[in-house]
Image (tube, rainbow, N blue to C red):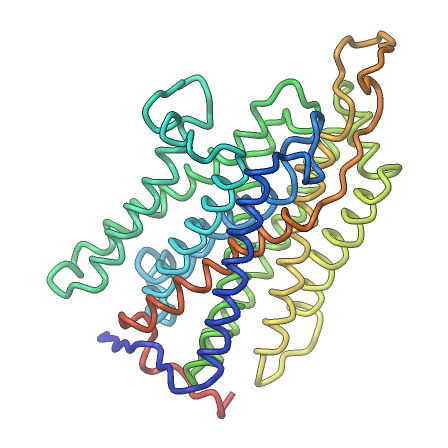
Length: 397
């Protein structure tokens, strides 16, 4: 079945307003990164105990979203779901844009981004960070080739092969991101084989939710939206992925309670972790899991499912952010178990939960990374035909 594509029109004033807002936020984030690099990380909420702060939460959120954003393209080319074929190109564009935004936040949060060239020329293959350099750059290359095959008619016959390679690569990429945490023995909360499958499913559900929201925004700008059949199918898929993610989250915490070395830190997060406990139960369980599942499966079907789908997607993104914030920050803040079954006393915060409060430069850097994603999409979709020409007109939705 032939599919026609078009570019994103810039006739609406909303396009330029959004573009200017994104550029302003991106520049503000760049200024915050320069401020942190010039003054030092003491101007942030990070310290000797918590070295991965709010920017890392944004970076991981964007990187995982990049992997899951290819869901639509994979379903169209590999699983024969032709209803998604019109959005395959945009799916690949969104995946690359999200990964670039996430890596930009990650690099600028290192404190010395100029040293990135050292990490790119001197490899320690015992470190999962070294492997991730290949995984991240390789994902951009593989997805770029995938897009090329979809754009070039002469190469369309090889698009399925490229799609299969991209499908496998994104699973390896997400597994590598989860392994960053799962391989850290020194942190009891991180050290778990469950990190890899949890991150894979989290990327699938989060990427689908982000795809829904971005296509809705782009559709509002271009005057066309996803047709009801595709929207309903995507909503069902999102619900299944959220349910699977919720199951793995339960397994992750239950296995932590069963393991003696991780019992205290898991109990800390679930019961007496203060802000972390609140974010987990309210953000992840209620907003990120119960609300979207209720919207998708419990509310009686209606002809127009766009409002339910968008609301469920927003709830899912909020819940995923809370999940990653608790995982990244609480996992560092809880005191390390230096000597099991022994009491450790010193003047260097041993046995004390580390305090962390995000600062405005960290928030500005994270939001700046998200803005860069939006800028790439607006420019690329304006130049090249990424959007399906047969999408439903906005007024009929």
